[in-house]
Length: 257
Figure (cartoon, helix red, strand yellow):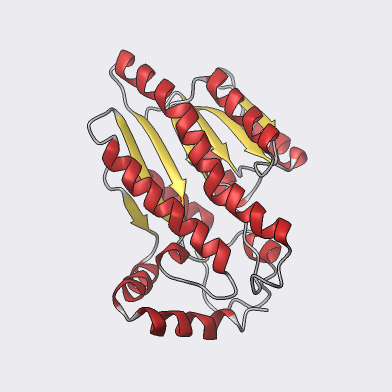
């Protein structure tokens, strides 16, 4: 974990804030998110002599603000990128607003692609010049492994991110960069409240566990699913008949509202 500078998106709370707290104190931080107050408070908490912690307030669904976050990361010369920002919305696709559906795709899928494409060339140059390694953690989801009625766009966007990350890792397997798709299941954050889910009905992991397992897995594997229960569930979604999986998931997600 000898990273000099890290970009963390979605750092205002939850898994993003836990990543900021979980990285070594020698790593400078660029914290990106929409909540200025939360970012400022976190920056004050983590800053120390010799450690720079900066914030960039950005709505990553907005092209201009997404560009500002990328420009700030380029200026910081980051060697670790944690694409954690993500949003979801419970409901049938035709009942969600078009704006909300598009926002999920932009934040969950488009943003990591643009960040990776913009930052990887510089990360590789610096890693090769310094005989070091760079890193990328794309936070996907256990939901990426199967279709999820009532959560269709969220799950599909995370499936895109999972497949993109696996392919990207293979393309760059001979370069000094480690790339991980981190797939947590239900985690104790504000995500479900914001998604409109009132009754989840099963145990959630703490964000600190997600972060710990993610950082431990970087450089050792390309995909990591958090928790044995989530691993078994995703295995079932991969191997059982697709129609059966879709119907089974629908029977669960329909009860969440």
